[in-house]
Length: 369
Figure 1: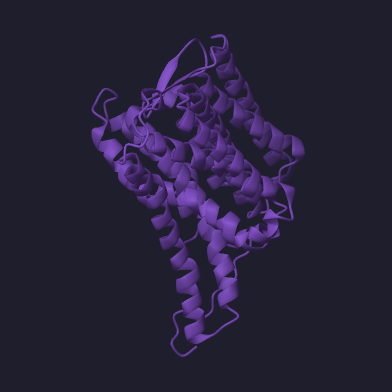
Figure 2 (figure 1 turned 180 degrees about the horizontal axis):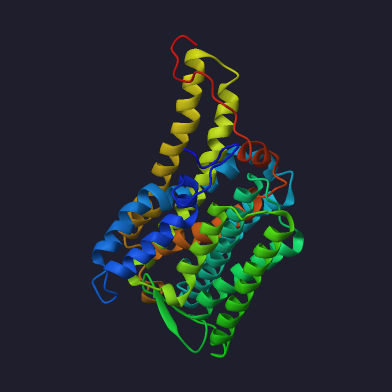
């Protein structure tokens, strides 16, 4: 895969451009061009459900394996890791278990609202990470104020989407659980659109100014990532069919970095060995990792919670149609945010070592090595 290379190639047909967001932009435009907004979304929802097993679910479980296996030594030595690995899951699990035992649908609804808030925040930070990582690999660096400006624009885009469900007195359903918006003033919606427009123009000005000053061109994959958040969140690009695929494209983008990190990490370890031992490490630690997170994802998101709900242990209409599945989804989605907020940081020595540099795996397929 060419997604992480010492001298990456730019271009709208490069793998990195497509995986960072270019493919999602193309699919969004295709949905608008060839699919009626009022058409049935059954086929697309079924496709999204199938893709979840190979992309969405593994993306969540990858963060768990990274935290509790690769970075486990940090959990009891660094406060942020301790919070992500011990405190937040204990508090969150306790909260959700209380909701299930007490039949408190109102508190469960608050957890749903919190999940959507944190998921949007997480999307923004991931997009920003894509921009920074793809730029650093091309020797493009942004000053503090330039980074803050891009982040401000990204958060403004997220705010537009989030406010759509929070202005006025609105109610929604999540697996039969009723939750409510915050009844914020409706004026905030058009105001947020203005903020997006003005801050977006400021980002364009900043990029032009940077090019004039030192000839720095923004990375094409970084621009794809920025554009992706626009089509994911702005109402102007809202399409029912495309909406089902947004989590898939987010997960795809995430797994590019997981794939790159694990590939480089395993290659560095495998290069200490030769022949059969080297190939065994590659199969066990790289291919085994991919298979493992896929199986764990299917078990965590579908088979185990659905099997538990089938026992009909919880009978409370306020907790929805699948209370255990709902609780599991809430737990993993919210906890995932805290995990990523700890592990994907520039002060993570292993991330710096394996995400930006690519050890060459020597003779992994050679029987004579």
